[in-house]
Image 1 (cartoon, one colour):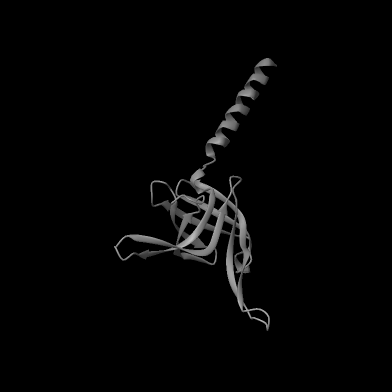
Image 2 (spheres, helix red, strand yellow):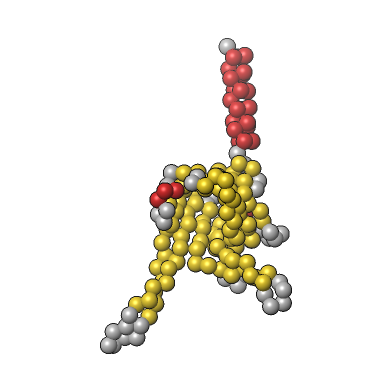
Length: 162
């Protein structure tokens, strides 16, 4: 009986260790990212110009994307015209890192393209700087499995950091 319990305990420990070894984690993915476009500066260097689109990748592997939209509001007799910025969640889901440089997005809800709701997107990523704040992504969508699309994301830094 003791031998059976010992064997069971050893198998349990090995099984847990095996499952944990199978989980790939890239903590550099976690954080708030801003969609950017790459531009050439007058001096020939590369600039990253931020767009009003953000993605939050969380430590529990959940993620959501959001977009900021500027709306012009007409003035009245008493008030000049002005603008407001509204922020909307555009998609949410979970990620699974398959290997460093490759992860899947399980899209639970895609509010701007409902056809992508409940689909899986395969992504390849590469950090372009040693601080891991610039990330190039290529992805295949469930609706188009033969064309890779590219995006560039910059990690949002605390105020005052460059």
